[in-house]
Image (cartoon, rainbow, N blue to C red; front, side):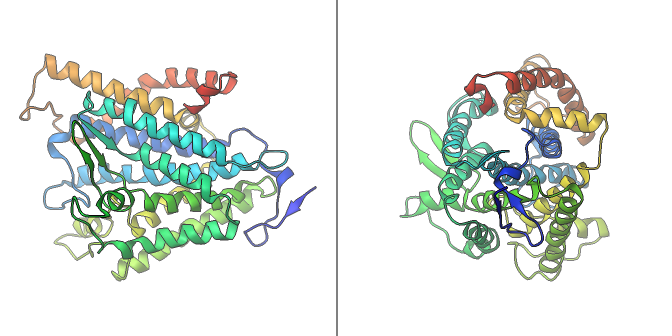
Length: 393
């Protein structure tokens, strides 16, 4: 057996001992969970947009129910990006031998950028007046970056990932005005902004630099799923890393040392104080935002390895075909909203809006129930077909 040194103390890894299963259930379950939470947030953006939230959220105008509903979606983007990096390591270390993931990552990244600018963008507004570069774009660009950086030594990938995630908050004071040299590049890398305004507009909504750091760290977490790492050892490592993220977060945030643009303050009630404490910046994702969400993802990954019930089976189905349900659910929301607006009419200015936050969750349950069987059918087709293009969904 061709055993190589592991980047984790006490854990051996080998090219011929990599995970043999084509899919790892706990990873699909984790993807499935964030798919459901993402659907909640998209229902909110479609049917509760009259009370849109800022970033970070304004405690004076956002109710606790809306605050925590929005906050659940914070888990989605970091988990997707982190797991994309982890999956890239698994791709590079199949059951037998090793292979370079560069080509796959580059092609897949370009595909995601194209999908974001076309199918996904149209599903939001029903037009192309503005091209919004959002989470799928950020994942695509991160994959393209990883396709190049994966050629570096493992330690260098880890060091660069930590440097970006832990250091990018130091770049917050840097800014460029529209039209100024460096504005477009900086809007793409670290600040949000319109990068093109002409016959149509292009806005970089997800600054990509921090996400590149997250995908690099995800790649470095891949050896945790090597075949030589038994479940109990992996769970201990995942729990240790997750709790370590949260412990560091408590220190940095508790003392307002570093990692967030706005310091927290004591509020008039315990609930509002807790809300202020966990009110983190997502665009770009602050260090504290990443510590909270990636830490939660690591703890959930450890927990999911011990669970076996019907709900976990449902999550695994959604997580095994994430791009399919992502695109389909956006179009279901677009079409259903247009139908409701045309038949019922607006009730909040030009918008139709739900009256309570609990209705967001209720509609999400109906939505994912309706999409479960189509997603399961597509997942089975995707994993059995030899058609290469289907694998991208």
